[in-house]
Amino acid sequence: MAKRNVIKVGETLLRKKCKPVKDFDEDLWELLDDMKETMHANDGMGLAGPQVGVLRRLAIVEVNNMFLELINPQIIHSEGDWVEEEGCLSVGNFRGRVSRPYKITVTSCDRMGEPFTLQCEGWLARCICHELDHLDGVLFIDKTLDKEKYLKNGGKI
Ligand code: ZN
Image (cartoon, rainbow, N blue to C red; front, side, top):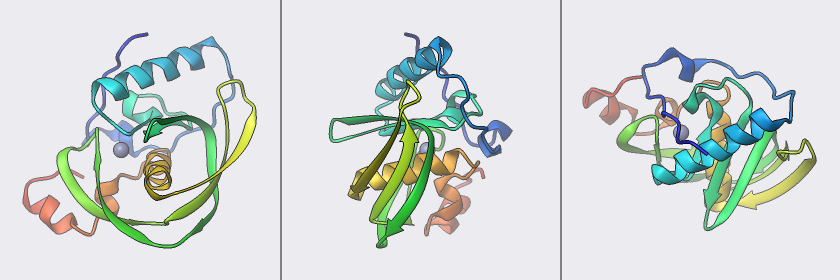
């Protein structure tokens, strides 16, 4: 395993739409292992492909010791509305309030290419929504209710 460099806001790679993962092979597994190490080294709750320069639809999340690898994930149902502060390893120290669904159902593949469906709520759901946004080039600073404050403090978009 090796730690990877986390790409910061301002770089165009973070704004691209990712392509689906096609090969569930050793390269993918190595990437996922590296991402886990990188997330832990940075005290993150999640990390998406584009944040380590890989424009593929994959992400990892870890909330309350529940670790998940999401390959080609899709949110198929969401309900509720919940505002809470978020941060992002690609954004630095700024934290801002974002409205997210409270409860989601997500379909995804695991690292072997096996599909699964997960229902979750609260922080795990929030974290998954945040990471899935990354796969479409969307950052939480685009959605935050505190965008004005972010921009006023010189935040990049
Ligand atoms: Zn993020």
